[in-house]
Length: 308
Image (cartoon, rainbow, N blue to C red; front, top):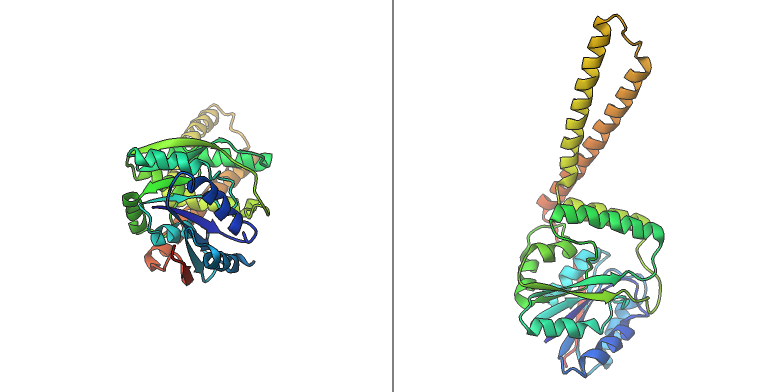
């Protein structure tokens, strides 16, 4: 059986349409499936819609998991995978920007023995130019940190049961599904898809939330920012060494500079570097603090399940 995990945040208008779209492509192919909706603290009637769908649907299993508050998409994906019962699990957006038709291609590849089927973007659809540029920068950084090409990566994936079990067992509090599924290894393959327009509503990601998501993802998966501090330190050491030699030569030759402007600029540059470095170190210390508290990654308020 195929479990389709659908992280849900303020998607009341897309709950039933997601079911219908997935059903339309899986039923004709004879693929038994269940839908796992994870209500991530929605402020609209998303969970009520999930409950209604669960009661009236008879040709598929519907599982609704509702959080006590908003814990974020990563927690929703984890909870969905932890509660899914299928032999293979897919993760896709509830707004159907990930096309349901691609599930069949992914499923057939799983039947051929592939354990991780990665959905990669052939086109990104209509996006704000600022968001597109930010996304490219983010994926370039995370690709360098992870050692895998994530330029077109997405959360649209299909994982074999043994991969899901290993992912759920990962002990870290701060997780990054998009990169960790590649990091885990296993027999994998990619499938291209075109990002579709939302069926209803608008994106819940603001620029601020995207920046926080990017910073959190990079820090949870890589120590590259810490290494940048070392590299900048080496750069300024070389710069100061060269400047020191130049100053000594001019002093011995009797042409010493007054240097007030130079000193002020150096103090400002080095002071800024120190403050930024302390900020990066402090951010990683905060991450360590979050990890050692061992708080749950999410709290489930209610679960509803029908039986096919």
